[in-house]
Image (cartoon, rainbow, N blue to C red; front, side, top):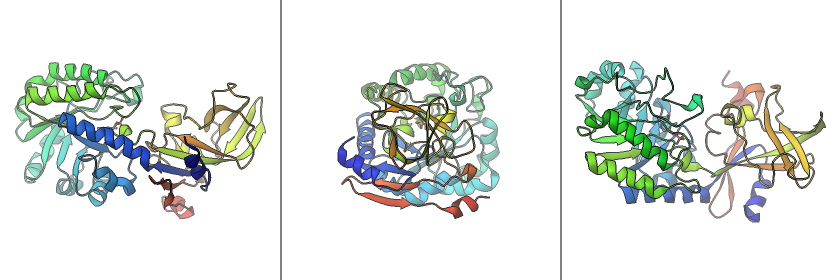
Length: 381
Ligand SMILES: *Cc1c(COP(=O)(O)O)cnc(C)c1O
């Protein structure tokens, strides 16, 4: 990270998330190239990143968004209304369906029973294209909580459960079986999709390859992605959609925190004004170790600390990190890659304040987008 950027981040009140506009733009440029060179449509999966302040920027580069239900669809409609809105939910509710159909371009059903339940209503909305989520029963995800093809999965229709005489009104198939994976995984997944569902694809208008494509990470094989898309497009005569979440805002955000206290219990401990459980829940859920600028693995650099939150949860530990200099109260630390699955997942457990949200714009200026206070805690209870 260059010094100017670092200085700008360290000047902010903590805790705060910071969206890095320049980094976001560089991701969006890659995604736009995928659209242009493959002829597919790229949709932001809002579940990963819903910072609607930058939706107008995102709208300049990609085709639109996808939603997990009515609220995300509404957010896209209000803040990125000029682009496509797709929605997939494991189950829709009767009372929300018409509103969804008014604002969405594509609605994907998770089962034949959902499709049959809503078919009549659905077909009265002739501005919407309807699809089904399939379960190709092939995934390379090793973390069970993220594996939609795990035994007993509720997500998608298996080949055994596919009712081929109920396809009237269905224009597309959708699968989502990847997580932080490369285009080689996509290629192998497509083999499974074609083997099990290929014969239906000839009669469809579109296919959606879901998310989990780690397109903007270093070393991702963009050319292979483009060739996979083109091959499916041409073979079956389909429009192709992909709906990455992570890849849109990968490495495009930070979480800045301050050291509040230092103690010792067998090792050096630092309490910071951020929480794994509240502000970066994937650290505990996935779990993973977020990177801190200027840090090393435990004992790699001279001073090692266990970093913990000011909550009562014993396990609210971010990890053990080493630094060249000792940490002092008031020092600020910058966690990287904190735009995705952070702001959308945070919570006020233990009465933890929510971090404010800043934009670091492409000229290096910081702007406060959102500040939260006591009322945000109280109003949800
Ligand atoms: C989570 C999800 C995505 C986005 O996944 P990423 O891993 O963030 O790219 C896309 N589509 C569906 C259906 C999802 O559930």
